[in-house]
Length: 440
Ligand SMILES: Cc1cc2nc3c(=O)[nH]c(=O)nc-3n(C[C@H](O)[C@H](O)[C@H](O)COP(=O)(O)O)c2cc1C
Image (cartoon, rainbow, N blue to C red; front, side, top):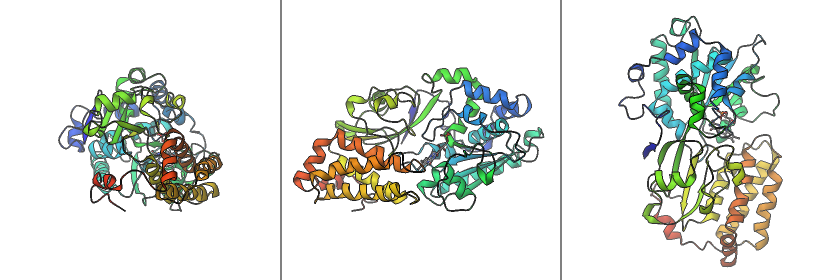
């Protein structure tokens, strides 16, 4: 797996041996930006800097971080919480894991600065259950920071009380959705809440809460160090800074690429990732995790950022790019994604609970035989009934991913129905899978 790209802002310490330890983070940097935030800057000044940086939420929706922080009421008399979303369940996404593994202190420093900005003294990191190694590193980093007096009753000797707790998730994709995450953190079943009230007003334990993705918060020390304006300039239009693109699939060099927002997918795949393995043709690109509508090879000149992608009929998502080579069955790909969404639906909303299951069943019939032409129309119809009719966006994700898979590869879907089976040779699929991957 490669670490590449044109920038070294978030990845600047990743090549250093023991980059996860405080001793290596210390060198020349000893939480300088946190110290400055705690001693020299007001909350409003920090928020202004972050607003000016155009830092966008890296958890998928791209909400401006500074704006989110500014919504937190400061006069309720209740504690304010910061919750860091390290659930990272979106298929294809693995950037947060690397931030935690390679540079947990950068995340902790970002947490401290964000806490000062929103008037919080306690932060929680909700980390996915499967991330056992990263969790150990995170806990060790927090212990190091406590022992060094960076966290505690008087953070860095400034009199500001600051502590961070790690909470292990139970391995449910839905708990990455911010309100179900809060439910889970409160010890309840991870079912999404109806909004409003929004977490900024009524979040964890009924108190004002900011929820941000790991990468969003880990970017904050860089914003403070270089200044919001300089950070904004590194990106494209209203998306500031670089992003950690995590690329998987059939490219020559899968990996994490730190590149400015606005880089095109063509450049990412063919320049940074070395193009397709075995010089095969590229067939399709899933641009931002399984929830995002697929792009065709001729659509790859769109800029990879939150504002450009909707113009191309897709979404930036988490920047988790999955490149698929010629010969990949798109019906089967769609089925895999639908099975995931069906399995992970919390079941609270009928359109998602039933709809994701129906979609998986119909597409399964198309893939394995026994479908009629009307089944393809049924996929579109069921998807249409899900969008906008659920509490959270899980159902929307399934319902917005599936139709472009059908419409952009219509001939392939029709061929499945005519042949009454998948036209792609099964042996080929098996050959490309490792024994561990093989599940059928
Ligand atoms: C089903 C579902 C799963 C999600 N999973 C994650 C996740 O694993 N990590 C994450 O940061 N955001 C996830 N999100 C987005 C969060 O709800 C929320 O928008 C995000 O944590 C806010 O942080 P940001 O503004 O820094 O992006 C998910 C959303 C949905 C609907």
